[in-house]
Image 1 (cartoon, rainbow, N blue to C red):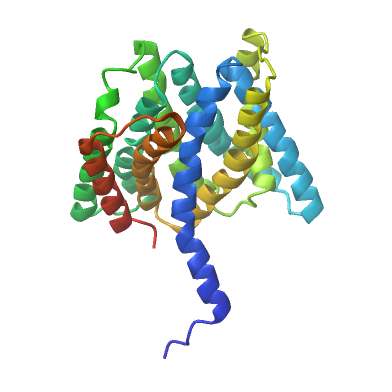
Image 2 (image 1 turned 90 degrees about the vertical axis):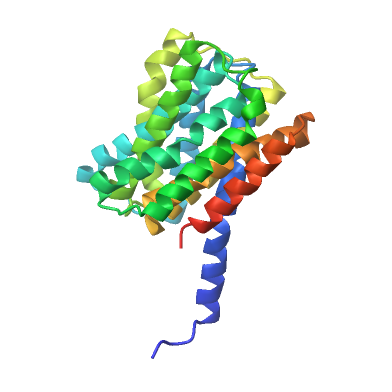
Length: 295
């Protein structure tokens, strides 16, 4: 006979059930904060400083909590995962927005990630994607397209920008699969220090090439603080918890909700309107993501 859930187990289950919504909301704010910060800094310089600040904060937290550091044999796998998720994904995303791709269009490209993750989850992780899940993925992607359809003719930017946007999806997909397979057991504090330091080393030559150009205005400092503390420390940790506890394809389905959430935030902050077709697409995406959410 199964035992009754304890109050603590019920609280933990309730807290975990809220993580997908928390992740989607705060991940979506990254497109807006990033776009704002890029007005005052070159993209790779922005990321170099961001990675160093996050690594420093996490190092202090790790020493304060006496968190265990990963063994030497785990450093390379952790570094690879960090470079894909942080240096690869964020460099490509910031590069796309820096050359003129709208935040909404960048988030549309991010909406392709669940499909790519589902395609590669089977051979890389041995996860099975059912026909019903494939149908849901197709509907979710269709909903993403509807949400940002009115932006397609306005913010595609240059071919280079669209290449960056697509590269960001490839990097995040590869990073999600790699983290699921090789980084599931890492301590989120010390493991993340390794990943952010590796990412800082990767973008260092590019930041040097930019001349470390950054204007530390109040707006830039606010964007940097939000991206470092809320996104890189808090939201990335939530993502890794979700990856650790759920199937990669299921967790990736949450990225379907990023474009409509970004559109809502843009409406709230900048007064951008949503067409009826976008509202329908948001509802479709929400329904699909709820059906494929991590258990």
